[in-house]
Length: 102
Picture 1 (cartoon, rainbow, N blue to C red):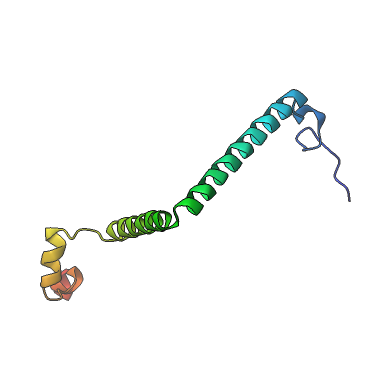
Picture 2: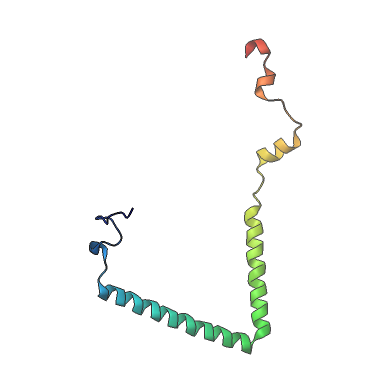
């Protein structure tokens, strides 16, 4: 069975965009692509001119990101948590009361 197109169907003519808007968006996309291409060629040139400096910068960034990642994973222990870790296992509340009081 083929469904009949309704007012909310994607094929309806009321939801089509203005062609001038589409051209403007395409112009922006092509300009952004040209900017990215120019940036990539500048980066490639810098890498060819100074390969050791590029490796040092990349290594420094990798170290910094790794250090930040490890710092974020470690939560500081509160005084309360430190005290609880030094205490022996305590029974739960239910077992502290006699059975007739529960």
